[in-house]
Image (cartoon, rainbow, N blue to C red; front, side):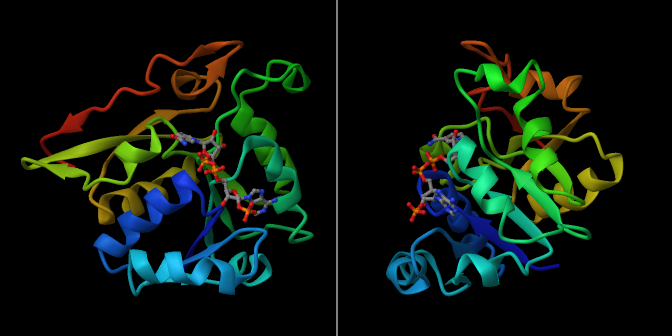
Length: 199
Ligand SMILES: NC(=O)c1ccc[n+]([C@@H]2O[C@H](COP(=O)([O-])OP(=O)(O)OC[C@H]3O[C@@H](n4cnc5c(N)ncnc54)[C@H](OP(=O)(O)O)[C@@H]3O)[C@@H](O)[C@H]2O)c1
């Protein structure tokens, strides 16, 4: 399994720290050239490697950590996303009218033709997500939801590898609604920094 983080701002860097902590290889990319991201990538850890967006999307699993509307630009990087998993860490807040009531991650999924999409790593502020998810033997919870049941298990396995405790919420418009915004209101699980004794 190969991993990339697209968007190397607050959330992208927080997640890069999680990969570095466990010595797991991850590519990071943004609109800027890799040389511009390399010093910060190197500072986070040797397993974090900056590449161009085009090279980064060769990974099997891509974490989307850009501003919400930028997903449309990222989606243009490949004509078809068959065989790939997108982990959508974006939030749309307040929810734009253009979504016509769709959960924001279902809207994102439509842009990545052929991909499996899992919403996750979006419910905590970046500063919290960046810290060690294992605290006094407890594992920080991350919530995963998807309209594609098969897609959640490998993302849950990655979350565990990174030290988090994944909690599966089911479909995007069912349990996943708890980690989406509605209008100007955050879902009930957003910002809830919870821990489980076991992963
Ligand atoms: N900040 C938080 O606490 C937090 C918490 C939970 C979820 N989120 C969500 O996470 C996402 C990222 O938030 P953030 O706070 O990390 O934002 P940020 O600090 O502004 O970082 C955004 C990153 O996306 C990159 N980017 C923008 N457009 C791009 C494109 N078309 N292709 C590739 N890279 C692009 C930017 O780099 P370049 O300008 O170099 O392209 C930058 O590295 C948002 O959707 C936000 O709602 C944020």
